[in-house]
Amino acid sequence: MDCIFCKIANHEIPSTIVYENDYVIAFNDLNPVAPVHVLVIPKKHMDSIMAVDDYNYVVEIHKAIKEIAKICKIEETGFRVISNVGEDGGQSVKHLHYHVIGGTKLPEKLA
Ligand code: AMP
Ligand code: ZN
Image: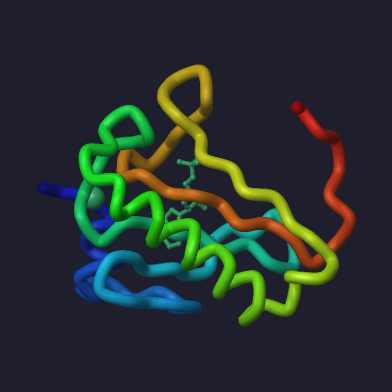
């Protein structure tokens, strides 16, 4: 499968890795929208939240988000977690990912 995030998970293409374990990998977004903008993905391919078939990965992603917040020193100041799904959600990469965004006061809440 020609999936850019699978290639990052397999270390086939470079990324700036922030955190990694057997289940997940987290790396800096190429086009950051804030001082901290990390993407967390399962190493196993899933298209989006709609395709999650193994909830161990959901737990691991949540644990990773906590680790990333500590590593990036935003655990006290706060941050936002976003997963865009499908057409209306504006998802551009069809491999499940969560944006962890922070390091500044974030603008405009949609929800
Ligand atoms: P989304 O629009 O929610 O699907 O988010 C996809 C994100 O992946 C965007 O914020 C892109 O900047 C980011 N992105 C795409 N390719 C790469 C890459 N090779 N390394 C890091 N981030 C990437
Ligand atoms: Zn993939």
